[in-house]
Image 1: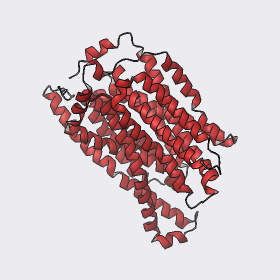
Image 2: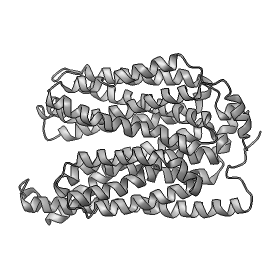
Image 3: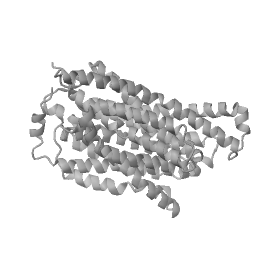
Image 4: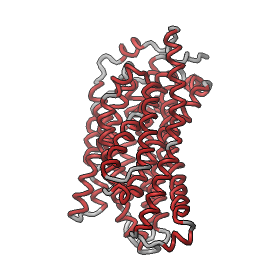
Length: 447
């Protein structure tokens, strides 16, 4: 077990608040750029791919958007074990510079140029690698500077991502209204990123919990990989991350005509809910524990997806988004904080592996949802030939889209249903251990 008093003593003189602010601004940049990218995808698709081959333009822009998540998963998994060896501050600076380099690479592409696709794809991959690198250091950094408030502070840290998306929404509207161009839109992230770099350059970072308590590099792997519970938590992270991220990406595509308002605003509303709920995660965690909090989150996410599958008016769409947002708000950060609580000896490797699993789930499940939607719309139309015969915008076409949207959100509810059962059992297990006077964390493996 880790002696929290020892960790707290090591933090004396460390500018904890300023370090957290620098991490918060960095995470804000990630949320900001993600929505700026999503908004810029339409003009990029039109300028680079529709003019060449409209039949394959969707696949090309999908590959460029999707490779970000693959890069994140790879970098997070590879970098996480070596954070302490390289140094948290160095990795933080490296990640920000790499992210800006990836953004600049995308902006170097010009329609019709020989290497245009390579620049778009390579820049997006570099952004993903940089984002994964940043998450590999910032998550263990936050739990290291707040060892007694991991769930609360990690949720507050990830609220920066939601805040970034909310700030990006009006920016996208203004850029479109004044025709400022997608390149300028993507480069807006440079401003907050440079603020983060200035803050980081003036700070001295602390040692991680693992290093403070003398857990070796080898012990870090053993403490994590030798525990069956870790693999169950890994599977849970795959499902909780997919529950949050995948349906949100399909709301704009599937519900805009179904509920009568632009689905984009439903997504923005969901992340507004995230911002509020994450602020209260610490209070909820005190009463429920991390497993109880995730059990409650799974219940709300399950109910939200079922409501989304039946939403047909602006009111029902917003209410479903509210319930879904309450459920998904705490899933990602609380799962990682719970991992740090249960496997403190796993250090950055345990947290990084969880984050990689979460982002990999998005990369894997996005096309799965796409295939589910295609199958549902064809089935609702009465076959492929019948669907092709439908004219876009007709009542018959809209009815087919309603049925298809209801199908994928209804089928997607299986993910939080599974995690609801898992976290309910884990909550009962934790309760029995607490009544027996047993601590939550797994014992530290020794050489």
